[in-house]
Image (cartoon, rainbow, N blue to C red):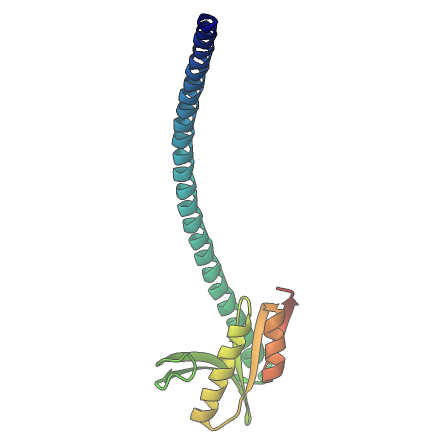
Amino acid sequence: MEFRYAVIGLLGLEEVLRRIDKNTEAIMRLQEQVAEHSKAILALQRSVESLSKSIEKMASSIQSIGMRYGIFTEDAFRESIKYLIEDLLKEYKVERWIYYDEKGIVYGHPSIVEVDVLIKDKEQILVEYKASTDRADVSELYRIGQLYEKVKGVKPRLLIVSPGIRKRAKELAEKMGIELRGTVFEI
């Protein structure tokens, strides 16, 4: 009987060893697949990094183009308004007020401040032309108005002309008493 149990045990051991060998082979194949996947993941990470850098460069270029376009648009507005108001209608005199704000009232540090001023009799209107207007633009013009009043002794009306005015900029302008001319959009 013992012999029979020994033979059965050997046969069972052989089966166990065979299965261990199969499992070892399967594990080796899985390790090879994991190594291949690791290489593929590394290649994908490099591609993503490269794409991210390209996207950053593209975003910077688009922003630069947008800023240039915005500046050109603002200049075109400024020149058109000056021509209409000063030359054709002869209603207002248009001046560019440039002042060195040494106390940093407008930007929080000493800087040059520039704004267009429409003048008629005692009325003075500070006008900013913006390609798009947000709350920061409204706050900036408000502080320029405060500086202008301190320097000139005249409380000016404040006006922003812009083809694109954010809704939150309009809400702030209403609270601050700043006039807006342009299209308000919901962003």
